[in-house]
Image 1 (tube, rainbow, N blue to C red):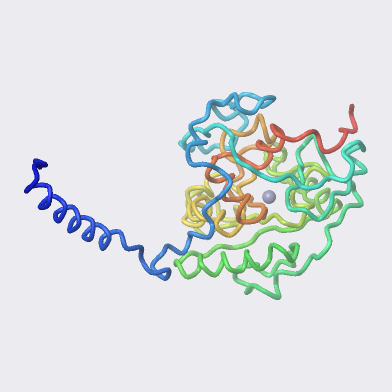
Image 2 (image 1 turned 30 degrees about the vertical axis):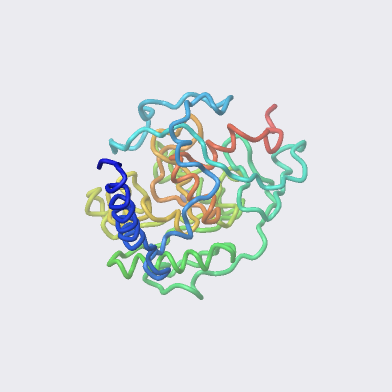
Length: 310
Ligand SMILES: [Zn+2]
């Protein structure tokens, strides 16, 4: 538009009208119209952080490009993990300079547990409650599953939302004591010796001892796998429940501990059924960064204890 003296006044009016129109168009929606997930959007990761080169965190083993040959039969085609960039505040660990076999962590939600960094056989988390008081039998399968109280409310809320979406999640496992893990391990060694290492950790080296981990099942799994009594199988990621959990569990504070292609880092094969409660912020950060808690912590924190074989 030309800006001579007469045109200048016209231009001024025109700009005023345009500005008013824009103001009307940009009027923010009422709070009620904002998406309900707004409260779970991470605040500590800038959106451009995902583009950072993978050298930002040192000491991280290279990401494997294909599952180890001993992996379960599934051949999922998930996208590769981006560079680890999650911002997670570490738990206060009172003493990292102790043998892992004597390690008793505090009540924080971010305790590192791997096949290298285990827990004392005496460690039992505080605040365990039975899920049967909070969830119906068709979800708990009648098992006397326990979980730390802090994870129960988010779990119940998540299960409720899954059921409202027409899904039928079941809970196969929760807290496992050191001795219960030893029994589970023995059961798998006898039942499926070839897959025991895939399906269970030695006692002291399972996240289930923390009391914040849930193994989920799906009524669709048996048909997908073609085996009636199957409880755990990589194909869980193909079930409606597995798909939903992968996309939504972080909104309730649960994170997938053992993602696809993370064996070299976590020491565990892909376990699409195994979710750990870490709180909404941490879980969301990890989800958005596409990494596991273990991967992030091993890359950014000093060892939590001294492995007993060192
Ligand atoms: Zn598990």
